[in-house]
View 1 (cartoon, rainbow, N blue to C red):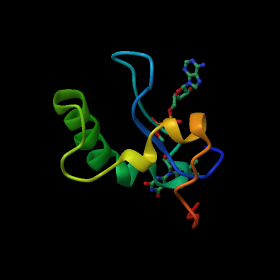
View 2: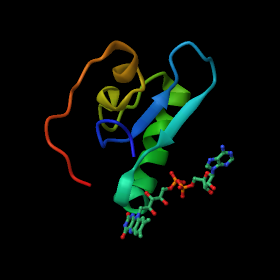
View 3: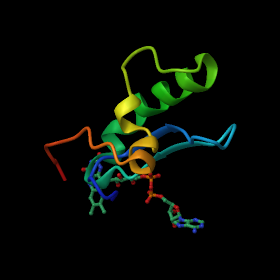
Length: 73
Ligand SMILES: Cc1cc2nc3c(=O)[nH]c(=O)nc-3n(C[C@H](O)[C@H](O)[C@H](O)COP(=O)(O)OP(=O)(O)OC[C@H]3O[C@@H](n4cnc5c(N)ncnc54)[C@H](O)[C@@H]3O)c2cc1C
C-alpha cells in the first residue's frame, strides 16, 4: 500500500537507472502484464507510450501533488 492507495510506477527521480513498480494493493497480479509493458517503454523511450503513467510517479510524494481522488483497494 502507498499513502494514497495507488501504486508507484516508473523512474525514481534523482536515481538514474532505478525504476519502481510496487504498491498495487489487491490488484497487482492483474496489473502486472500491462505495468511491465509500460515500465519497459519508459526504460527504452524515456516515457510510456501506451498509456500516460505520470500520475503514478514517485514524484507525487516528493512534491505533495495529489492526482487521485477516488480509491479502489
Ligand atoms: C490475500 C490477497 C489476495 C489477492 N488477490 C489478488 C487478485 O485476485 N488479483 C490481483 O490482481 N491481485 C491480488 N492480490 C494482490 C497481488 O498479490 C499483489 O498486488 C502482488 O503480489 C504484488 O506483487 P509485487 O511483486 O509488487 O509485491 P510482493 O508480491 O509483495 O513482493 C514483494 C517481495 O519483496 C520482498 N521484500 C519486502 N521487503 C524486502 C526487503 N527489505 N528486502 C528484500 N526483500 C523484501 C517480500 O518478501 C516479497 O517477496 C492479492 C493480494 C493478497 C494479499
